[in-house]
Amino acid sequence: MNRYLLFACSFAILLMADNSLIFAGENLDELRLPTGTMEITAPAHSQTKRSPVIFPHSTHFQFACKSCHHEWNQVGPVEGCAASGCHEKLWALPPGSTPLRDQNIKSLTGAYHEVCRDCHRKQLEKAKESGDSKQRFPVTGPIACDGCHPANPIPIESSDTFLEIPIGPLTITAPEGSDPKRSPVDFPHAEHFNYACQTCHHDWDGISPVQNCTVSGCHDQLEPDESTKNINDPRNSKYFLAAYHKACIKCHLDLQQQSKKLEESGVLDDNKLPKYGPVACINCHLGN
Ligand code: HEC
Ligand code: HEC
Ligand code: HEC
Ligand code: HEC
Ligand code: HEC
Ligand code: HEC
Image (cartoon, rainbow, N blue to C red; front, side, top):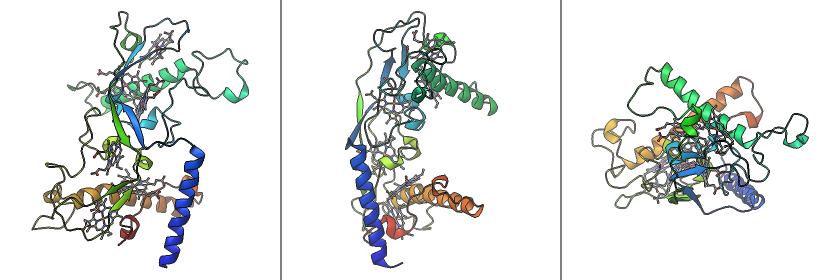
């Protein structure tokens, strides 16, 4: 394709991205992610019947953030569930008394029970189906009332441990000591927050600082194995190029293929086709 056209396209995309940033208003450079255990309580002044719920946030980072923060735009602040315009009411109002525009918004109690308990049930079913519901590690969270609302709650202090998560774009460079042939890659980190963090940070425990991919002991090999350049060969699992290309390109390619298949089957609405990232060298290594 014509170089100028490519340039014009990416410029247009930049402009569009810039605009959406303006509309979104308060974009962050970094997200402060609470990594400890929190106590979820009903909003102040509400009449409550049950004890507050102890919620280990980071135990849940194996799931995409959006499985709970469903309205989050991935680059701005995360709103609390009871924020204005969201699940403000503790209970559903009697039928007929809810203004039309709010009718699709669940009560806070309804939302929590649906999201928390339904997922715990689903995970238990999955574990039963795969036959490992009795393994050593918990496969699911509480389903019974007193599992979440214990009769004799131990008071906890909501933990104040945080991790700073860069929103990006991050510039990924070849590790020190290598002899790079391509330009560094601009990686829009937050555009990937609709996946679970562990899709990429596969050894992260949800609490400790996140390690760089190329730290010593991880993908720190600077050259392919002498016997093979194949990035899928286990002998290259520590080779940094293999790790990045396997993670980045494979996912983009898979999604591109899904998109093509759907298109061939007659789906023409762009919004219904899966979006994917660059698959051509030049669209990641922007300079050369
Ligand atoms: C997976 C965890 C979970 C389970 C299981 C669960 N709840 Fe809840 N429940 C919550 C959360 C979170 C809230 C919102 C925080 C709050 O209000 O304490 C809540 C809120 C409530 C409230 C409104 C607040 C209050 O204290 O009056 C009631 C009542 C309640 N739950 C009753 C129950 C009953 C009864 C059961 C069993 C049938 C149950 N819950 C099971 C998590 C759970
Ligand atoms: C299983 C559900 C769940 C998942 C998954 C989850 N969170 Fe949360 N998160 C919560 C709940 C519940 C709260 C407390 C909300 C409240 O107090 O209203 C919370 C609070 C937060 C807050 C603080 C919001 C505030 O009010 O200051 C941030 C920031 C946050 N989450 C970010 C994330 C990010 C980023 C991810 C993905 C790595 C994530 N969460 C995954 C349920 C979840
Ligand atoms: C998308 C699925 C999912 C959602 C949503 C979810 N959970 Fe869980 N929860 C799990 C799984 C899976 C585990 C077991 C994980 C583990 O211990 O490794 C778990 C574990 C727990 C535990 C027990 C942790 C422990 O250390 O034993 C509690 C308490 C809990 N969840 C509360 C909640 C509350 C409260 C909510 C809603 C705010 C919630 N969960 C939403 C999947 C979910
Ligand atoms: C989805 C994004 C993406 C695509 C597409 C991609 N790469 Fe990469 N590539 C990376 C990342 C990330 C790294 C690690 C950072 C770095 O070294 O620049 C990397 C590293 C490399 C390296 C090792 C470092 C260097 O500069 O010598 C080479 C060589 C390379 N890529 C060549 C290619 C070639 C050839 C193609 C097309 C067949 C390609 N890449 C397509 C993301 C991509
Ligand atoms: C699609 C892959 C991908 C996903 C999904 C992803 N990240 Fe990253 N993240 C990266 C890459 C690549 C880097 C840059 C690492 C490097 O330079 O080696 C990075 C960097 C980071 C860093 C900075 C590490 C440092 O070196 O200081 C943190 C913290 C982080 N990610 C946390 C998260 C969290 C939390 C989530 C989930 C909300 C997440 N990431 C989702 C790929 C991803
Ligand atoms: C699990 C799937 C997945 C992985 C892994 C992944 N990506 Fe992506 N990437 C996507 C999707 C989906 C999009 C399209 C997002 C959109 O348009 O909303 C995307 C978009 C991009 C874009 C284009 C963003 C834009 O604004 O046009 C770049 C650049 C990119 N990814 C680079 C990378 C790099 C570098 C890595 C590896 C460190 C990586 N991706 C890993 C799924 C993935």
